[in-house]
Length: 175
Image (cartoon, rainbow, N blue to C red; front, side, top):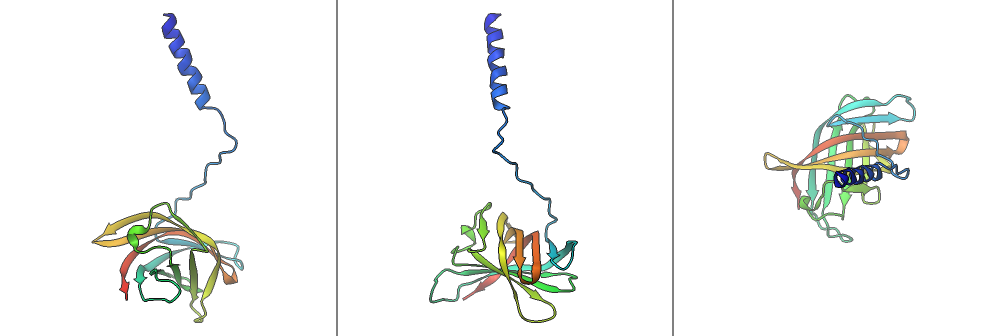
């Protein structure tokens, strides 16, 4: 009986040790984004607006470039029903050799990619000034690669900020 009581006391003490608080750990806050939807805010507007994206594709540009022999991955999507913006373009240049090299969970900071917004009213692209993208899923659909990126606080000139999750389907390779 004494051994049994000692066993349960040990189990209880281990449980208490496992439940001790750790004030240094902060649980990340996750948002359940609707797939292929962007939340766009503009410094001129107080409220964020949600937009569906279409034509969300990516292609690989393997045209030789003098300063870098790595391919460029160009991701783009059209922003539906926006009165101001037409297309989001993200370029990952010189970081990966092919789609197999992308790993789920990888986060790309603005020094590893560049992004632009194409306004509806003119052809001058708005460049990103801060933010990140994270690869959250990688799959094959009908033998095509699909890379899903979470867009995090991607901030552009003229005060636009974009958040969301988009599936980009492989469109082809340019040589």
